[in-house]
Amino acid sequence: MNGREKWFRATNKSQAKALYGRLKAEAREETYFPEKYKKTKQVTLRAWIARHLEGCSNRSVANSRRHGRFWSLLLGNRTLRDITTEDLRRIQAQLKARYDLKKANGTRRKAPPTINRYFSYLRHVLTLAVNDGKIDRNPMSGVKFFPEAIKTRFLTDDEIARLRDLMEPRVWEMVAFAIETGLRRSEQFNLRWSQIDMENRVLSLPMPKGSKSRYVPLTDGVCALLSGWDSFTKSPFVFPGKDPLKPLDARSFVRWHFDPALRRAGIVGASWHSLRHTAATRRVLSGASLYGVQQLLGHRDIKTTARYSHLTPGFMQETVAKGSLFASRLESQVEARTGSKTGSGLGNLGGAASQPVDFVVRPVGIEPTTLSLEG
Image (cartoon, rainbow, N blue to C red; front, top):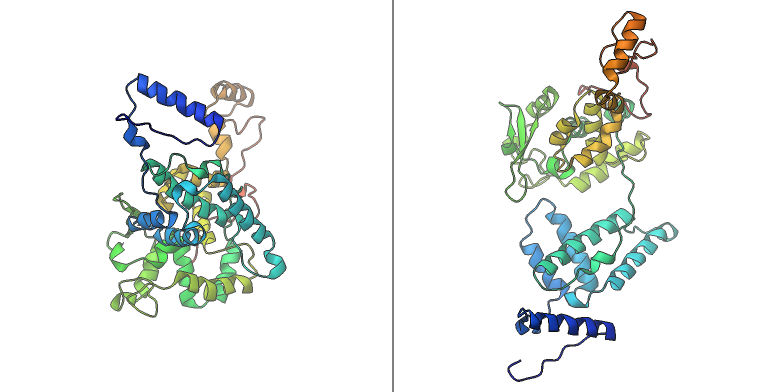
């Protein structure tokens, strides 16, 4: 290059041969540009995370900051090119081992799903580094995530009634609001009065990165709750904290009010997020479409909403029957034998009356329909 030799470094003979072959091919095809092999200033993981957080404006910015602090403390001084897949696998194994020993020493450790969230953040950050040309390969590509069980724990009518009896009126109203609207915890506790349109009975939730707002219709029960709250006279937030200019701290509220009520009511395995599952479950069991539930809850992917599909009475039977090539022929044969119409689908084959939806046996823990807001 310009009359001078240009040296390249490889870690082993195989890499050296591969590099030599690629450079010869580039030179032959006149696509060899020496400047792309020049050394560039190495960026540390801490600096790259800080740059990412500067432009982070989505609704999970708090989680991004927490994950960023974790990785900055752990690998912050490493350059992006020095982070290897082996390093990340070792860290993952150490975190899992600490979690397995948490019961022995009584300390709180990160559970496998939480570990997955931290590594998911790192994968995203390193993918941006690959796209920006800072590294050639994402070291997270060789790291497998821990398997996670999909939990859809929801509250039955009996559990809801027990909570209502044990809670202070104001606390119960916040729980009822969560079940009626299906909002995420962060969406509810950061809700502002300016987002509520009582005239049109709807609340709007701004979406990140310029996306269209999500609209949640308000039921009669929610309108009754909102009409009884007077926080709009002193705070922009529907659920203000001690400082009216700040929202109520969600973690503190759940820790000191909601979780103790669950324990007193003998409700196991539930969390605040279970209220969102309860909202979805009640609507599916009441006959709402999965698409409608998806729009209500703001799921980006219908696969997330599909977890509730097994709750729909006759969901798979109706789906199969509607697509059957033999449905009309079989129904005609049954009508000829019985002298009566079977209706749509294959439900009456064999002469037995179809079972009313109200009497369909449902899984334990599933209760239909309406929620009473009266104490």
